[in-house]
Length: 484
Image (tube, rainbow, N blue to C red; front, top):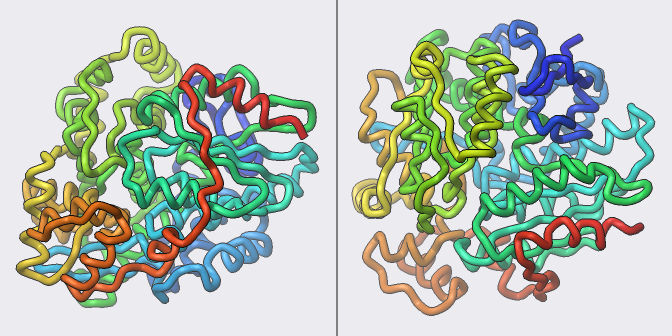
């Protein structure tokens, strides 16, 4: 059976279900499969299945200790009647490109695909391991993970969840989605700082107080949790299947994927899809003005000591890309990865070898796009095709235009444009109003494109979560709320 190792020490191991429960390895590393070859499947069989069938095969390969029957139950519980699109993640042709719409879930962002599954994984894993502690989900968010995690874990038995988000730098709609969330076990708290401050605080808490109170253990809903990352692998197969079904490619043809990413999780799922056997051509990593990943993928130098920019694509406003550590493990090994992570922590930078960079560049391309290029893409795509991009997908669109590869290019669309209505309106030449609610209404009326019902509903809900703390108060905050 496949086992899981820490990216920083191959002797730190866990079963698949315990890797999900733990979230983060005790040495601060991320869990990765011990044997990538054990993930191999015949993709030709998988792409002939519906989305749930694909999920059953892929989940079962990564997490065999659940057993086939339990995996089938988890898939059904995760995806039945939760998405407005029958295909879960429909592939839409826009001009000569393809947009993979990942925002048809309950919070209108791609995180729903994985965070519909993670609570079911976690509850089942606890039962299978006779794990009796209450599970406290601790999560940092740059915008979308928080609302999807809060929704996914709301009133899930045996769990509580605390989400930390930057006080400024996210849209009003993103904030309202978190602060109005129902559920007796949910908590959202603003941090005076940026996403990296919140994420660093969460990692420190995991390392220093993994059991913050008697009978309470921490786990994570961020993509540092392998149970959050694996469900994202499925939609790479779904996109490929849709291209084959449409006659755009033959099975075996390579397909490029352009991914707007800050934390490197969504694109890391593409790496795992390729390792499973899917004919992935290139993975194009699209960054906004916070271009730390573009620099790394181009030069091999990772440097978080730089100016932090607040942009209209806030979920990408990240300078420490946690999931990159998983890629480093597969390229460099655990000892070197631990050394690089130590340097990043102590000096804010590290540089990999030319040989290591060459291995990464054989699959990944890093391209950044400016605020202006993203806004221009929104305007041009709407005028030419009547299609509305959000501010993150527009960065990926602009990056794909710069890349211009020979293979079909699937652009991962990570959020509904109505989550960022002010910026989208400005990009298409409309005058925004004062509030997100007004902007949603004006954008809907001006484009004829319906706003998602869950987003329109948030303005009528009571704000329940109002806490704002300093970044160095996070640990005490968790301790205070861990008392059962």
